[in-house]
Image (cartoon, rainbow, N blue to C red; front, side, top):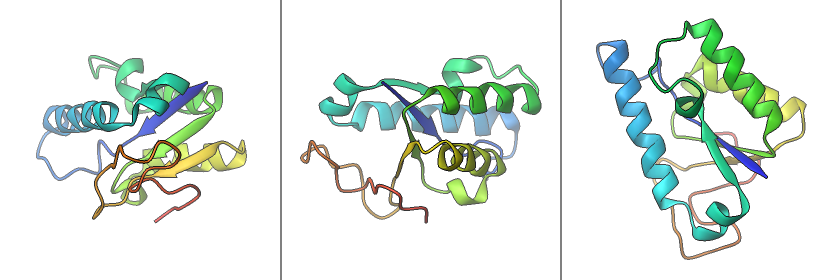
Length: 128
């Protein structure tokens, strides 16, 4: 099973694309580290940074690869701020259309690894 992590890149506040890209990449690494072991054991975890590790694809090329990854995944995790990101919204709509399991993080509730079923901070079918 695959879990796709969706986090904003271009919608971030950093000044340059490279700064946005690095901040988003670090955020995805934080999420991966904080996911409870049951998720790490059940899912192969993928994000746009696995698909475009150098950040060299055009936005259209990168989004095409991301949409394909969402379609090939079983679930998607939408990170904080996803509703302000056109790319994350596309990934969400793809997941919704293809009936994927949809999780989101809560901005005021850090990932809680204590609950192996559905941790606090993750909300199934919660979109905002």
